[in-house]
Image 1: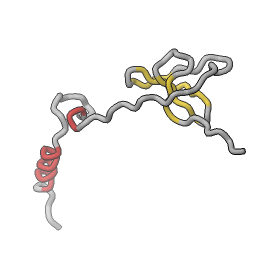
Image 2 (image 1 turned 90 degrees about the vertical axis):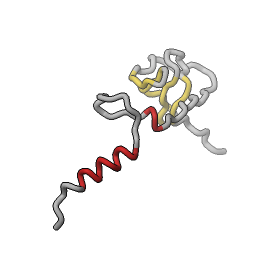
Image 3 (image 1 turned 30 degrees about the horizontal axis):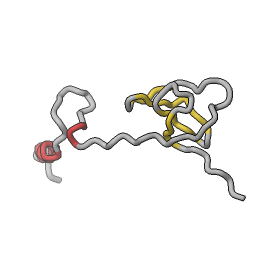
Length: 97
């Protein structure tokens, strides 16, 4: 007789307080997610509600247009060609050895 697998990863929040809750080694954690935004909210005291856990629906990965600079200074999408040209500009100032 084998052991039942323990939930690991994102599942619908069995407490119905949030959209999703992260499980580690079969136990609900304080990491929750609503509308794709992660935050912390400890699970309520007491036993977990009865019922089957359903895996959370994964968010669709974004394309290169949703990547922004860390500083948030510009609204321009990431463009690999711009970074390549910037690297060439920097290389032009490096003295040869």
